[in-house]
Image (cartoon, rainbow, N blue to C red; front, side, top):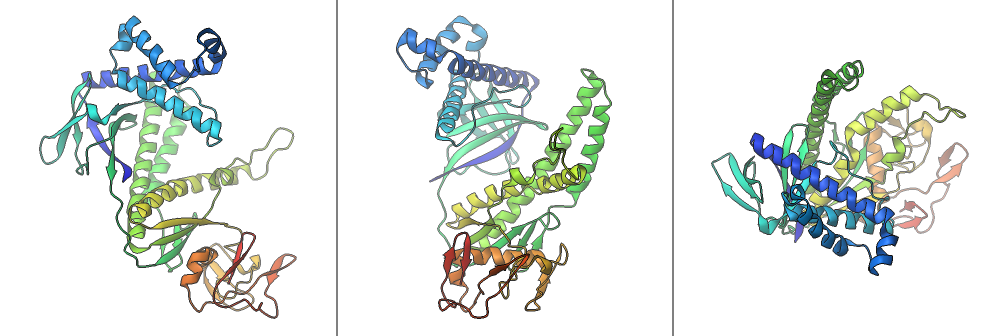
Length: 423
C-alpha cells in the first residue's frame, strides 16, 4: 500500500472561514511555543522533572494549557497534537542530518491544520459537490473532482492565494508493472523543458509567460505603494494570486506529462541536477562583487519557471505507483558528448539547439543528443540497447578524442570508471 494525497477546493461559509483562521493560528502558536521550549528550556525541564523533553511530555503540557485557556480548548485537540508531531518529526530529521534546524512558523506562510482520518466523515451532495465533517467546525462543502479511493488516513486543511483547500491522505495499492522494459532518457532545459532520447521535445505552456508578465507588472505596482497601506496589501494579494495561478498551471502540466511518461516507459533516467546551486545568485559580496548579475538573475528565473524539481517528484511517485523506476545519473558533459561516437568536445555544441560532432559528422538537436547520453549513462538501460558500441573518451586539454583502438572489453555489456559508464 502507498500513501497518496487527494486535494480539493473547499467552499467554507464566512463563519467557517473565521474558524479556519482560528485553528491555523492556534496550531501555529502551539508549534512555536513547543519549538521555543525545546530550544531554550530543555535543560531546565530535564533538571526539574528528570525526563526528556519530547512529544509525549509536551502533549501532557498541552492538556494543562487547554484546561487553563478557553481559546486554546476551542480548537480541536487533535490538530494541536499534530502540530507537536510535526515538530517532533522536524527534530528527528535534523538530528539525522536530513534537514536543517526547525524554524518558527509564520503567519501568512503556515496557514494549515490537520485531522486524523477516524474523526472525518464525508458525504456526496450532488454530481459536483461533496461535504466533509470537521471536528468543532461542522460540515464544509468541497468541489468533488474525483472519488476517494479509500477511507482517508488524515486530512490537512491549508490556505492558498485562491482560498482554502483540503488534502486527504489515502492508502492505494501499487499497480503491477506492464513489464514492457521500455526506457527513456530525459534532458531538462530552459528552451525545451523536457527533451527525450526518443526525439520528442516538450515545453511548459506559453500561457505561463503571460501570467509571469502580469505578475511582474503587479510587483512593480506593489513596490510603489506605501508600506502598511491597504493599497499595498491589495497589490500584494494580486501578486500572490498570479503566483498561485502560475503554480497551478505548471503543476497541472507536470502531472499530465508525468502520467504519460509513466504509462509508456518502465525506466526513466534523469540528470542528478543540483537546482539550488544552479539558481544561486551571482551578486557576490562587497569585497568580491559578481559579474553578469542581471543576466544570471534572468537565467535563474527561467530555470525556476520550468519546475524541474517538482516534475521529478511527481514523475517519481507516478512511476512507483505503476511498478516503474526513476534513476538519476551524473550530468557532467552530457551536453558535450556525441551520442554516436562518444567523443566529448564542447566545440561540437554549435548553439543551444544544434549539436554537430566534429569527429564523426553526426548532426542533431543538442537536447535530444544529451537525452540519449543520459539514458546510456545508466548501466541497466545500456544493457537494453543491444548492438550499440560507445567509444571510450580520452581527455586531451580543451576537448576529448577517442583512442585509436577500443579496449578489448568494448562491445556488448558495460563497465564503470568513477562517474563514467562505458560500453
